[in-house]
Image (cartoon, rainbow, N blue to C red):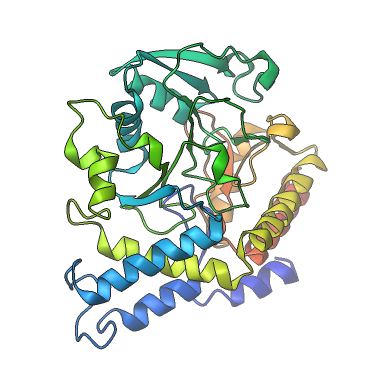
Length: 372
């Protein structure tokens, strides 16, 4: 074992290198603060997860969390921020039920596994036009935007900016004109600055860059709040949830509280501009290791490569089990690729420290030296 790997392992103090695709790492400073406040929050004599969501302590948490998220993403005042449940899959249904209005169809971009899941669910409620499809290229690249076949009467345009399984990330924000653009940012929200005004709606499951599983964030433009279908369940209705400050039902209070701590942590890192630079460095190191090697391979068109999820294969698939066994022994967890694509995958969300990526790179080079 080389010095860098040994030194970093020595500093883990019982924590592993976690490259899980989600639920994913939470910043250690956030976990430590939550630990210190777990039994007695704000001198309540009770945990934040034990107090009423309508009590003063939690309402302050909710208000500050929303403001910190607005600050980070520079969310305009004409957008509502909702803290909901049900994950991205819940939103796959909520979106057509809320945004359909008097339209009969919506445009969807098929970029991989999660886009396909969104399409399948939306087809229960309206006609889906697939305006760009990467299936023919095995989702290693996508058609150029100039070749997308936008409909003339779509209720909205939906796309998935980052595909966690295939490791494809859009290098641009699509121009949907006057049609609301909807984005599933579950796996790349808060990884870089974005222009919120280009979107009608953004949604994200929390368990990658926001906090623990159980919370779903929806950012929706106010003019889209009153398009819901008559049979849209109240718990999924954006207008209902907005009017009730995301508390039509009891919200996932502990997940909301932890998300608020993550937002503060991101601010302390220098905001999304600093996080953006860090993510460039982390992914750049890993892709360079892959590209400089004849032993590791990444099939995604470099222009479309994800900074959050880096899948890779070995020159000899027979070594996959050896790589996974030896990497786990060295403290690296959840590097096994999704069954749909095989190989390996390193998910390097915001909370994965740069020195963990350095350690992985060092391990990969040593493994190649040993078995290449």
